[in-house]
Length: 266
Image (tube, rainbow, N blue to C red):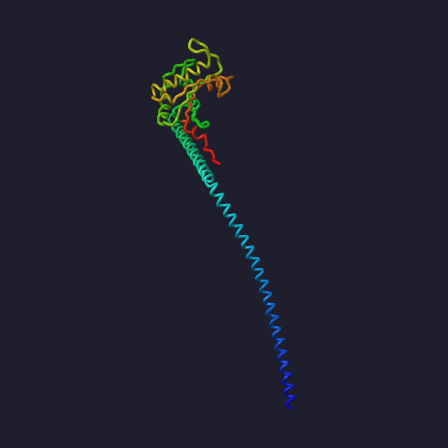
């Protein structure tokens, strides 16, 4: 009986050991599976780390290249920026000068029309053409027919024009003589060229000597019959073509300086 009990105990012990071994084996297997999973995760992490290292290295290389480019081209970039600033300053300066010129012309036209209000618009016309103010005066207000000497009634007109001119130091004056196409020849003039030039110089001389316009601001020119305002085939047209034009322009040296824009540097 005692031997049987011992045998039973032995069998039970063996069963317990077998069960324990099975249980331990199962746990070991789970541990092995978990370990394998961790190994795979570590492998993945190492792969990711290697990729990040490669990316970082590439970024460092690019940063290094950028540093080299910046050091090499810093002066060129600075010069380009300075050139762009100069171009911008040039544009702003030119715009300012143009606005100033337009303001001067507007003031001239307004003042001239106010001063010459007593005269017929057909005989004296004031208008802006391009960058200049034109005062077109019919020759019957300044000269007798065929004459190059100014008439007495011309004094009031030229005095008023000269007064406006003298109020502006930044303008020049071109006086142009114009004729009709009717030929003329006498002891004083050979043709319409002579007539137009001599009438222009007569006006210039009057502006200088009687109205104190500085002579270095004055220019006299004759255009003869070749820039007509109207058809020379009619008496009315011929009358309109016989005229003296006082052309007032801003001093152009400041604009000539501005015409050469600063160049962009490479």
